[in-house]
Image (cartoon, rainbow, N blue to C red; front, side, top):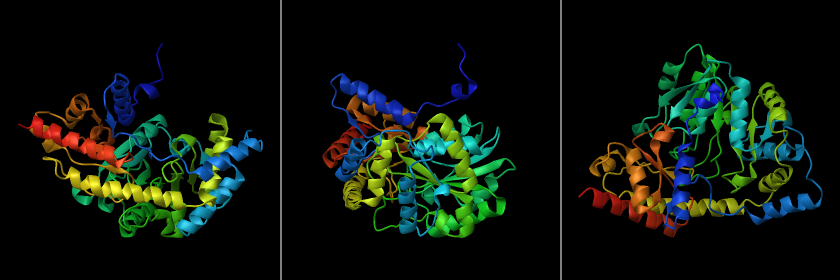
Length: 394
C-alpha cells in the first residue's frame, strides 16, 4: 500500500528515537540514565489533581465546546493580563490538545502549498515537520552560537521572500534554553510589521527562567505586535501536566475562529477533566511552580559546572527551560567519531547515558541534555560522560 506523500517526507523525532532505545536497554536490565525527556520529573500539583477528580465526580465528563471551556479561556485571559499585561477576549483564545496540537492546527489554517515559514536553528524537532504537513516549506536561519543561538533582524530580513508567511520565535528555547531580550524582540518585530509576517511565539517555557530573568512576550511590546502575533502556550511544562494535554493559542479572532472550526473536525474538544485541572492550575496556588523552578535552577547550576570539566565540551549557560545544549564536536573528534551522532550512540551503548544528538534540532555539532531528572542521577550521568570522553580520547 502506498502512503500519502505528506507522511513519507516526515523525519522521525530524534527525542522519541533516543528515548525508545534507552527504554529498550533498560528493559534488558541495563542501568540506563535517560537525559532525553522533555518533561518535568515532578508529579502534577495535588490541588490540580483534586480539581480534576472533583470535576469527574460532578459529572463533567462530556463533550465541551471545540475551542475549550469558557471558564478555562477566562483563566487563560486572566493569566495573560496578570503576567504580561495584555488583554485577550475569549474569541481570541483556543484551547487545544496540548501546545503541539495548537501549533499543528495553526499551520493547517495558515499555510497554502509552498508558503514559507522561517524557523531559526536550533529548533524544536516538530516545527519543520508540522510546516511540511501543512504543505508549507520550512526556511532555516542559523542562530549562531556566538550570538547565543539567536537570529538577528538582518538575518530575518535576508530570509524573507514573497512566499514568507510566518516566523517562529521560541523563547525560552528548546533546545538551547536561551531567551530573546525585549530589545531583540522589538527589532525582530519591526521586520515582521514592515513585511506583514505573522509571528508565532512559542512561550511554553515562560515559567522556567533562572538567574532573576523575566519573560517578555513579543505580543506585549505594542498593540501592533499583539495583532501580528499568535502566542502558543500551555500548562505542560509550567505545572508538570505533560500527560494532561492542555495547550492553547491566543491571537487575532479570524485565526482563532479558523483553528476552532478545524479542531471541531479533528479532535472535537480537549479532554474535559483535563481542562478543569488546567483551570485549577491557573487559578490556584503557584507555589508548586516556584518550587519546581527552584529545583531546576539548583540542578542547572550544579550540573553546568560539572559539564564544563569534560574535555572537548563547551556550553553556553541556558537562561530558561530545562536543557543544556553543549557543543560536542571536539569531544567527538577526540574520541575518534566522525559525527556527534556517532558519539551519542556510542555513549548510550557503552556508558548507558541517553542524550539527544543536536542534528535533530538542526545543530549537528551539539547534544541536548535534559536536567528534568534528579540531581544524583544527573551527577552520575555527567560522571559517565566524563569517563567516556577521557577513556576514548587516550
